[in-house]
Length: 475
Picture 1: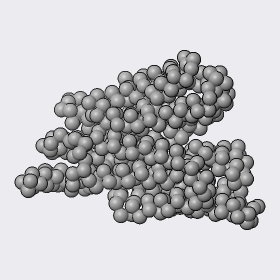
Picture 2: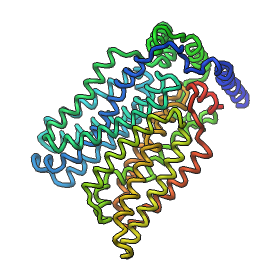
Picture 3: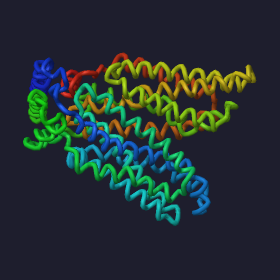
């Protein structure tokens, strides 16, 4: 046992030491100053069409509820199953997509995700009853869960370090855009037409994948040397000097190949434990801080507080898109850790203001102030979530795992995220029935714990290559 630990320690030092030596040479992210990065932007666009599809899946059920129930004579219980089964599909997608991504590659996994979404939308479009609706919704949920993992991983592996945070954060922006636009279009077209519109992002992704390269890091890991060099050159520009970046990636992969093939239980070994704790912890705090409860029931929250639900919901949606876009643009300058600390602090403030508004209403105190406090609290809450806690956990998750465990570890983190999403949305109404202001005090406490967790556990990854990040964490 001691011999094994010594060998593993020596191997891990082999990962870390070369990275430190080449750090200075990689100051520009591994590409020459004359490199053309248009292929990175095109590849990112193709990938985040999957994120937009994710948003379309989430946003579908809300504007179509009345029409589907009327056309197919569904009970409220049957429609509730249709609305919620997507989460279970996402959990299945989260469990299985990691190994699929490792086996088929990042582009192959994107194709699998699209295939499930296409099958799901077609099943919904041709539905004559509850069963085919549920099968279609389950399939689109699988695609959602798969996209939620593979998109940020693919972007993180193709982007130079000076653009990685910004480009990976576009994932969250496109999800939010998909939700908002689906809600608006859903008011204007039939529910069957909206299902067909959901096919468009999949078509763009499937078509676009023919024109972009595979992840160079995956190609290196699978031993495809010539394809690896071609893909990296294509991403960095034909005139870019890729020698330093290619050497670093290959040295890292060679060292990892000397380690045993990772299994799920291996994630809890000492050398990987910190990465797993960081990723799982961020996902837990992202979801249990209350975001899905607030998101799914924002109209009811405004109504209970005595504020116009339509005005509040529109303002909520617009603010979410704008702030997420701002966060994406500054992530590589401000850093991951400062953004998430500011975000969690704002979530505490927003939760407390909302709790105070409900406390005043329950005790019939300062009734004229309660609607203002409620809308202020909710808008601070969603603005704060969008600037950090929404996107940053996915960015960090895509950066911190060594490539030999990325599939297993990413699946675990994504599964935890989706389970947390279900738990938060499922318990929200029960908590509000127990105590409206107590619910938001609980969310404030959880977000306060998130501040402590991030301060103590989460490293800053801005301006570092993936190999440097992973070598420093997994010592």
